[in-house]
Image 1 (cartoon, one colour):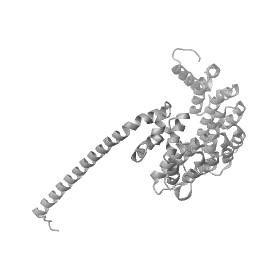
Image 2 (cartoon, helix red, strand yellow):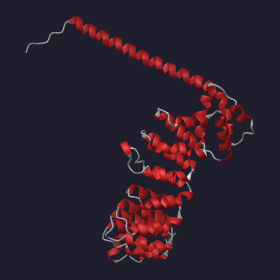
Image 3 (cartoon, rainbow, N blue to C red):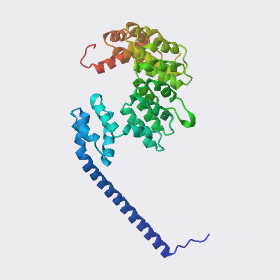
Image 4 (cartoon, rainbow, N blue to C red):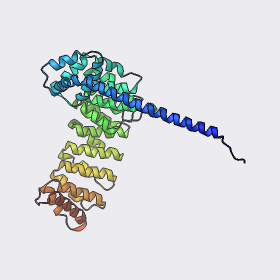
Length: 363
């Protein structure tokens, strides 16, 4: 195969083209930075006079003047102030928050947000559902619920968080349904997002959440259990106990143990002790040990003491750690197992106690 000969003029042309391209790109970057810098300075000049009114309003020190001036803004100033006010709404409560909402309503944000939840733009849909949530527009849940199955995952997650702020218990079923995989990859929202939203719905959603413990999807059952514990839905304790006796999925069982512990009823010591038995998966046993520590009654302390000699050293160590954190009664239980099969776990617990209380004492 013969050598490829490149003419010198072609090489020179290529170099000139590369040089011209470099110059154009450099000029474009410089121009973009200059333009952005000018826009930022212009924004500061326009926002500066409004910032004092915004801060006065959100601090709760406004006597009416700042709210009036902000409500009377027109044109581009509205577009500059609205994002700032929406941003502050997630940080303030009470009268200052209501005054901010009044200003935003005066500028038609609720109307625009309702229209924006069906926009072709995912960014606008997300901003719209978030605005409705932080403004606590109570009757807006119906606008937000369909977006839980949005094709844009960011919109769906934002919608769940928005519903938690809206606090409409009627959204509980839709939130629970968003945990399981849906059509075309929709649904399957992060567990923590849905749990946080369901907790925000308050006690009115307790029965709906409790019924979800009977659902076919394991993730949904786990979410329901976690919500019951964190929201302190005591009315659903019986459902938790019943499911703990027949559930087979380890993730759900661990969630049930955690929830039962958070509800803190001493009568559940027997249920949790059953979940620490050796035929249970380790994740379930560990969750049950921690839950027994939450109960902290004499029966739970005895159950934890019996686990100090467990064949799984991690179970024994966790039981010891939980016991010494319970105060004098738990510490005494550990000290009573410093010999025999439980010696290693007991020594571990006492060492952890010494690290936490280097000066001494049993507190």
